[in-house]
Image 1 (cartoon, rainbow, N blue to C red):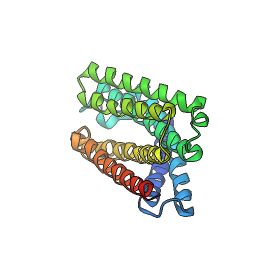
Image 2: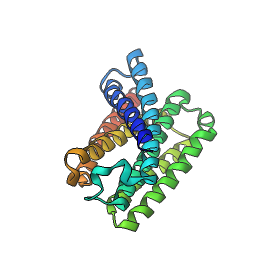
Image 3: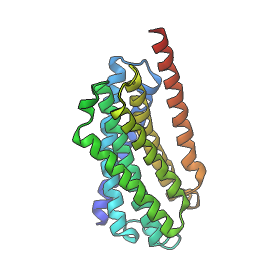
Image 4: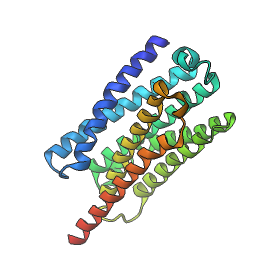
Length: 238
């Protein structure tokens, strides 16, 4: 179990590092060009790999919390390790995969929402809802309120995804806004996990500090709102 856990961690770190570096190329660069598309594909694929590896990490942690995180055995204990590094990481991994795939499909099919409503895309909405509900339940069992607040992001993601997928008459640029929301959201999810979970090795007491979880969210939402405003300006000009 420990060896498998370490393998998942290596894949998670390598893919996540590549993805988080490539994240800034489409965000800060010229939109729609070859560089934007190439970097976007790298980011999306590495996010899918990162999220899949995180599912492996969280599963190993749920099954063997003390073996996979021996450095936290005395200070945290098995229940808290299992909740934070198991169930909450499983939720964040599902969120990352959901957003990365959904954002990719938005760019690929644009306003062809019938093609976007494929079995995988819809199943990911169900999986994320289940993961968010479970995150709340597990957090309440040990009195970890942060898990409840984090899970709200999952419900908001599913609600906005389904609203676009089934909206009767979407606006011409709504697919682009959803594309931005989803892929920047995937970046937020992974940056949050890297900053918060990575802090455990150096400052364990700060791992659950709200600021570590809020900062990537604030930065990411600012990027989304800025990009949405730019899309609205282009739409008015067109």
